[in-house]
Length: 339
Image (cartoon, rainbow, N blue to C red):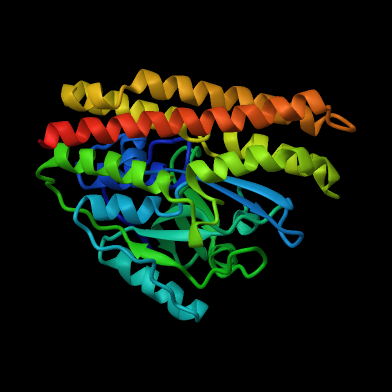
């Protein structure tokens, strides 16, 4: 038995979650671009973590953890990842959604997705299920930069959805992909998403410890001088480069995509364009790209030079200042508009 939801669509994109959310918006004839979905989801973030059990032991993340949930809630849809500990029951729940013509979002570990051929685990990848073929034992999924639907063995999909091999354990996480076919007050929703983005980056993390947001960016700059002493120093620098410039960020730590969101918003609603100018975010994204290049160079040095380490530290500090100033001005502007 085969079932593929009629009217499915997939436009290859830069980042897993924002790509499939854009696909979903097209399915419901809202036709949001990938950058617009990232912006509605207040998708920018920054987290700095250290620990010998981490790989690498000094780790950066540059995307909000709440992108998917914020996107749905921005459009008035309640969101919470559903979990089903039993793999068979988890598949049946997803299959029922497809039978009702509802696509399903999944968390998946790329290590078990055949088309990646990955040697490393990353369990927070997001894909969308559009169909299945029980006779062939395959699922039809949409995934980031791939054209059309990917035919994936059900056994591989199950392993990817129930991975326990990394920092985050999966339990068949899924969410029914449903959106309203008409959205009112979209300008106000976009303004609220920009406001929420500013608030998220201002949050220093649990207990105010300073590992997240602007504080986390500054902390990374302060701690980078110690990275050469780590056993996996080269991997720490290499990962930092990759998580800023590659690995589905669209370049510039997701800030390039966010600049395109602001450009779209400003073209549609000029007042929003004035309070959050896209070209200023483009400048910030280019600074992130320059920092990424420096980090890549440090990963290739046998012993990173003190000069380059200090330069990288200054870059982190300056980027925190730039982003804080940008979103501070945006918040002030949004208050003036609201009036």
